[in-house]
Image (cartoon, rainbow, N blue to C red; front, side, top):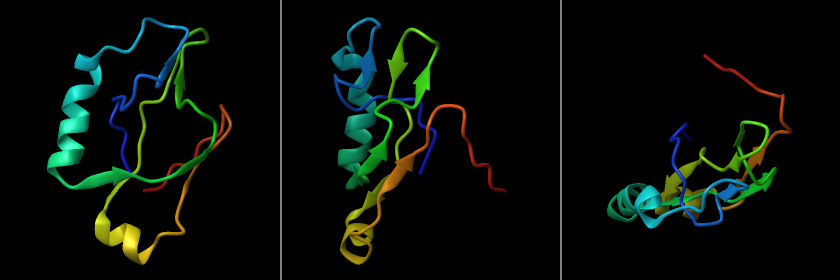
Length: 87
């Protein structure tokens, strides 16, 4: 899981400027090249906001072996204001 600060899809921003292909290309190319995919998420659609614009910039990515052995895993995006910080 990571704080990638990157979007994967054109739908990853609400109320801001439209997501451009150049904003997602590097991250998408990295995932394809590394044979990684994003885990299923539940909860909020967006992981960052400035109060007006909402973006999904945090992703949990895994390889195929994770999917095969832990297919039931999903990421829960907590309500705004909640955070869990682990060492």
